[in-house]
Image 1 (tube, one colour):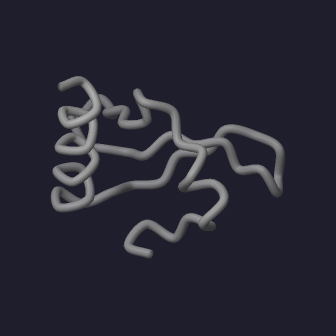
Image 2 (cartoon, helix red, strand yellow):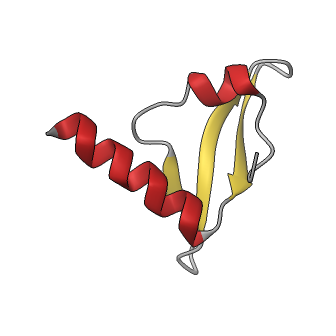
Length: 60
């Protein structure tokens, strides 16, 4: 909800879904299934932290 993704798009995120711009801002990279293309949406530090924590749990 915090980044505006559809549930189906959020459920299909790739493991390496966080990318950074030249200034270091975090973006969520995902496949927009409705538009059938890759898209980026800015995310805040809390969302980034939750995704990173989930990635660590998966790796463990």
